[in-house]
Length: 450
Image (cartoon, rainbow, N blue to C red; front, top):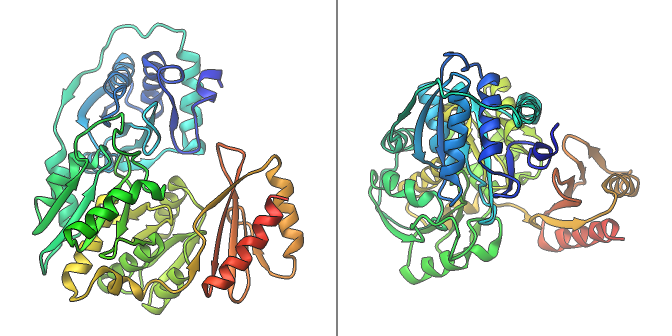
């Protein structure tokens, strides 16, 4: 692979700093190779292209479009989009899609998320490596004339109608604080929430790829401070925080406390099981064990998966699962082309709350059974050596290697996974109570950091 593409090609997308790693020249070559991979070259079809609000995104989107058109493919440009809006367009129009975004990364980054027609994912082993290798060979070859057509279409209304139809909200009127973090939820939330009976308190809806208020990364608890304060100040029923490309959503309850994404997975899973008894629900290896327990108690089939969206989408297709959740705040829906949508997850939570008489904390209490550590990162020089040490230390406990190492005992479990992109080990621990979790967490961290 060409060194420039090797530096930016990740497990699920292309991502790097701009303009030193990602620029129009690289985007043009990527667009050409992508057109060939998805079969739209030489008049073979059309690609839908959208982009986020980062300063570099319009230029990169234009270069990707030029690359597709140089190969003889047509482009439908939907302009400003959240990633799930792009997936909706790819699904509804049955077209391959390219989204220009670096998701929750800081302002200096950008990237490309790509899919086949019908929002089917493309990851490293399902086409992304092939595209990156071919694009590297095209870097120094002139693109030639733009033979394909370029059409523009605003897809925001179609997207809003779709997600509201999939998760209607009815019942009592809710007051909701929404923190868009100056990201793409500032574009989509007004359109979607304007269709339901809800009182919205907007935070940072102005699109600004420099993220002047805080990074659009709800996984970092420090970015939730303003949302939590606003929920308290306004006496809101709940708060919603979206990441930069709005494909992830985190929920804060009426007490301004974060609701665990595992609990949201269990809640949405039970909503689907009420409509489709016996359905299959996916949960990844770092979700709370309350999730499979609750799915099974409600008559569903719970299937455990590795972490990562292309893996989960493939497993959803294989098992015909109706829904899947990740503890990182990604939620996947069969009726949304197997794709993830933070907005659709938010609508499900609001729908469940509006139908109930209680608060979010009361609603979610039944789905929160255990004490969790949250993800703890440790820098290591040899991840394999550390994992081998853990395998030996916990040889008397149940172990599996579905994704990293999971060790399970009667009253606790932990998972350790290596990062795809950094010399890090990621630890998640859960226990029957806080004391058990803390004891195991400290014990495992000592072994990791020895």
